[in-house]
Amino acid sequence: MGAAEAALEDVYRRRHQAFAKALASVTGSADLADEVVQESFARALAARTRYRGDAPLEAWVWRIAIRTALEFRRRRPEFGADEHLDPQLPEPEGDPELTAAIRRLPPRRRLVVLLRYVADLSYADIARICGISEGTVAATLAQAREGLAEDLGYSPTTRLSTGSTK
Amino acid sequence: MSSSNVHRLRSLDELLRNRFAGAFAEPTPPDWQAVRSRAAELAGRPSRRRWHVGVLAAATAAVVTVAATAAIGGPPRGVVGVIDFFKSKPAARHARTAFSRMNVLAPSRSAFGDTAQARQIYVFHLANGDHTLSVAPVDSGSFCWTLSDFSNGCQTILSSHGPYKAGEVAPVKIGLIYTDIPTPTMQQAPVQIGGNIRVASATSLQVQFEDGSTTTVPFIWVSRPIDAGFFLYELPRDRWAAGKRPIAVAAFGTNGQLLARVTFSVTSTLEESAGASR
Image 1 (tube, rainbow over the protein chains, first blue to last red):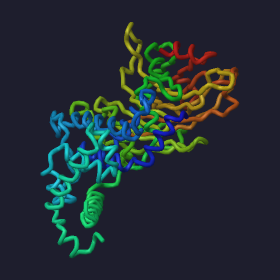
Image 2 (tube, rainbow over the protein chains, first blue to last red; image 1 turned 180 degrees about the horizontal axis):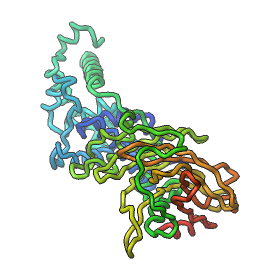
Image 3 (cartoon, each protein chain N blue to C red; image 1 turned 135 degrees about the horizontal axis):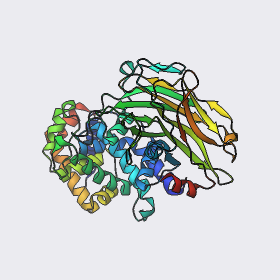
Image 4 (cartoon, chains in turn green, red; image 1 turned 180 degrees about the vertical axis):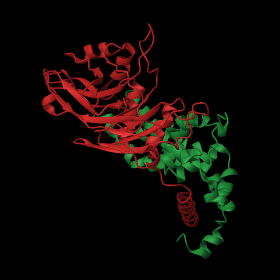
């Protein structure tokens, strides 16, 4: 096994859950997300000689993964032929309040939120994946956070009164 | 940013992270081997050389000896076990995913059709690990199968009556796949042989070697709608050497009569073999 493959395998084993969960929000299905994760890493493995090393390996795989998720999503008849990125929670009935709050965000802001809070990525990685600056990531997240906090009732008073965030 | 704002931001971050964590189902465990296999497919070359001999052999009809065998009710005798397809548990998610990729069950609906009919059939315990066999019927009356960490594929049912006119394809009685690795002498040496057998009257399966010796290979039989036997055999190291390698797999009936036989194209180099297999 070469060094590139070993590095990819390491990312895959460490970050498999994060990929699967975040991509489920793009594909709309946990089953399909599993498939997308496998396909994405396979594509990365097959194309590993094209990785130039100018960005972290994981960020490179994320870009492949999001493209793959969109491609797979288009094949699902229930989603129609929509080619736009429109991330959603895969099981909206599990947390309707969060689902509604997410839906109120613009699609690109939703993706940044999911990459941050589901995939647990750094601002720098999100910037590389989305092709925007770190400053834009920070601003986007700040706006999204405020909107989500309001919709979910996470006001400063609430947090202080519950004490759950101390 | 004031310290209270920083605290608020961190608190909000934590709250959202926890909230999102509860909104997603746990994904299936990672399977790097499946990723590697898929990458090999994408690259157009298997990670371990793998030749689909059976279909080629049937297409040429030159290396398969076909006996007229009518479909016989009930399983053949002498097999390791008979698996009732409908009593088998549903196939695992990774197998269903593989079948989805093969587009086996609902090709008219989408690339990801209903794979609910796929069943997990049997686990072959070999020295190099366990290999789980899952199968799925196909609308056409044929079937697809996966053998974990080995291979997967589909077997098409074709006309079972000869003689065959020019251009016609003979039925596949033995679908054969093997993996091989370069040996220290760089000679082609199959190390695992697997596949399926569609001759209901077969009671034994035999691997035949270059030195004239043979070994009996156990197989399991899967009931309708699959109606086929499956086998997976790992060759001992002493069978990797030239002069001792396998040359054919043959199926025999109750009275020892030859029912079907498919040969390997064992050549001295991997390149020659690849050319011969195309």
